[in-house]
Length: 116
Image (cartoon, rainbow, N blue to C red; front, side):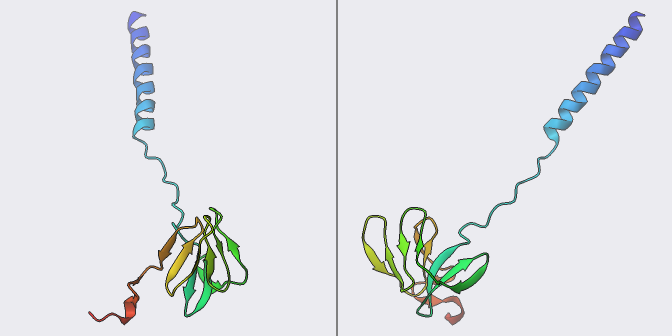
């Protein structure tokens, strides 16, 4: 009887530790990462455009960014501190109100225009 109780206790101990180990070593599925900075307004070929859902389209109405910055369809941006600026070719206004350049456009050169 002592052997049976000891054996049963040992099996329970081994079984429960195996479950704990499988929970520790079991990899968690990664959450999909949203495309960073996938929506923005930009000046392209002298026109205000908007990137949304992976598609570039003309900007049809003025937009207010999350920080209060306003971008107008004529390319004028009024920053949250009240200053205004006119967007230049290749500049982007991200939805959080940060200004940057479109990917691949730096110092006024387009990647496809550069000679390698």
